[in-house]
Picture 1 (cartoon, one colour):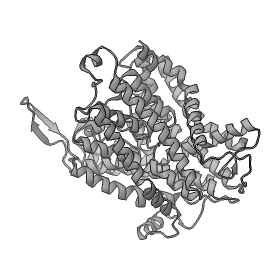
Picture 2 (cartoon, one colour):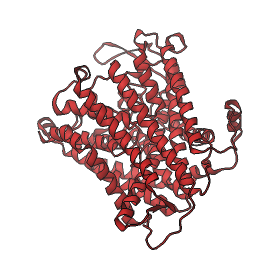
Picture 3 (cartoon, rainbow, N blue to C red):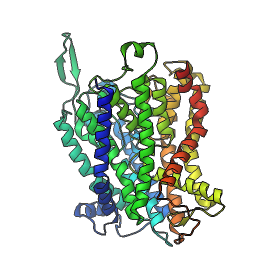
Picture 4 (cartoon, one colour):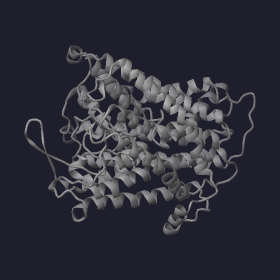
Length: 556
């Protein structure tokens, strides 16, 4: 088990690696989305789907393209799961029969980049579904998030037009030029570390140390593991996710997996800075993300390593639900990275964390997952917070606020405020309905504050497209499959549409020159102000619910 000092070294090395790749990867993504040339394979894809790579779209046309593409993706994955028993590479197991509600929930989950799993992957999904369904959507949903982020940045960068680029070009380039090559390299590294990659079904029988026979399911794990992390998807090939030794064998592969979760999201602000013509603006957004992340991971490690309660105190650590291969410190870093982003991958069981450690994981998601957030979604969420911050600052000094030369009028603020209200309403309304009726309450393994925390965590995870869970909630019921599916669907696409509408409003404006009253948005004061606004915005909304759940449990 890692010691606290080893955990700090583990974290320091991670930060150094992210700093090292920030500039080259951010610059590379800038070139990807601004290149005038298409690759040959991309031109072939455009011909197949009937897209003109030279055409530009307005924000509403861009939005319609995303929605149409997502509807087709949900239907494809839904029917692929229901028909998998008639397709090659299925598990020959009656347990693979999917109910319509579970198939719906899973299809929405992976298309929306959530990866909420109310099933055990190795016993429910055949290899064809894992590869052609789950892994493909991990690529595509990640690319959609990046496309929306780039579109919002174009709204700031361009002036007096209504053209925001082509969704089809952004989707294809994000997949082919960014996610695929990084995933290929990541999969090779994971295979070298011991992650399996084969086509074995449930026909591998081994003898355990106790002499019993156990059936082990193999599969193309490394290829799916890489994109689940890089694309902020997080869905596990196996039920224990990255706690399973076939997905995450050693302490150093654990480090690699956390790095892959964070690398694109922490590099995208550099892309943003290049696109708006000010690297300092990119550094400011990166700094806000870093400040929030450092505070969060410090608190998580403090609560898990400091522990409290009779049993953790007796054994010297909060080790329940933690893999001994990784230890408490490294697992805390993984949990924090997973919930600060929209990844949702886990290498330990969040339901077994201390009450305050579980609160931090929950609060990370309730912040909007912006430090650094999911691929694309973290950047556009942070830019929305920057818009809110300059509006508040403008009210304080009595002038029309501006950000990157664009005026933030009540129209833009309506889009920004609605962005945050959408997920907040979903979380609180969903939790309230679940606690009000005996049917949903029957799925809770615990009563009292921890039972409330399980339900609150589930709707927080679904509405913020995270996918991790407090394992004490049995969510594979018709009610939860339907309710959480709706939360994922609305929580993903309504905010996206609001971001695109904001981009459409901004791109029509001209450039407002700076004046003595313009708030500097590339200085430490602005970084601190955005961080404070982010925390206050979340605390005002969720503190009452948290007080009834993890805070009440911690005090008790």
